[in-house]
Length: 356
Ligand SMILES: *Cc1c(COP(=O)(O)O)cnc(C)c1O
Image 1: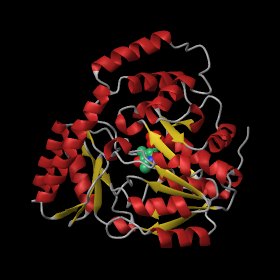
Image 2: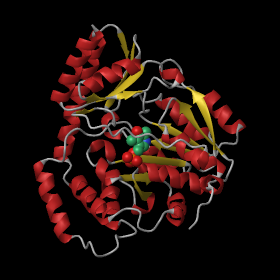
Image 3: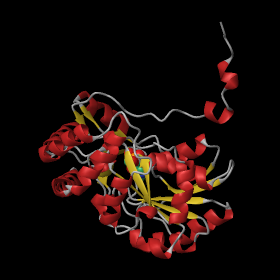
């Protein structure tokens, strides 16, 4: 029998970490995780059945994701050597930090932004340099660049659009960061399909630029697929760190089929874009809250009452959104994902009821 003091064996920076809390409350209406509320349409599901029949489940996956990379290359107008596939883009964020950062190095990003940059950095013994966003949730390149350079930051992360604020930063300022930073610039385009703005065309001119994309927000969150587009020299280093079979066969092949039959998914996206403006209009009419513009599939808003109380009242009505009020810049702010028309209608009715 062994009864060691396990905590003494755990390294300090892991002990001091808090587990990333993922809401997994069973609610009828889930508007908290920026997922696509629509399941894959029937014609896509038919294609998926075929994948199960033809995938060699007794064999290891293709370690190079060749089929998926071919499909992505065509869609993006890049070569397969420009691509790395991750088990979600979260995994790629972790791999990038492993590739570019030594213990104690600094990574920089605006604040507030996607929480995983800081969480993954902390777990790896890296320092986070945060640059406060202005009241429009935007930033100026010059002071950001100054603090990046002063701290010797190795990587800057720019979520574009930014989660959880919803906006795209000024293109000209992002451009300046890409052009002038002496480290790596990661433009995280997880919400690209809802923003339709990208820095992809800058890749040939800037070998320090990495674009991240994800399948999670457009209907395949369960499959965990993300990808990086970058200079082949960077991809080659990622491939040294990446575990050989990081993306399973089913995820590779289902993603490939979906991308080759994207029209019904594009219809879902178009519906969500129409719903986004409807949601923003309706929320703005409540008067007692501030609604921020959105280029993504979610909307950030600030209420006059306690956001935690509003969050709980919605949850009592079986509706789950995100309460961001614990962040000092996001006091009484909540984030709601754009759902189906019926879900949005129900959410807005509950809001009308609660706010009155
Ligand atoms: C959701 C999200 C991701 C993570 O996507 P996965 O592919 O599911 O890991 C990355 N960046 C931002 C900004 C996100 O909001």
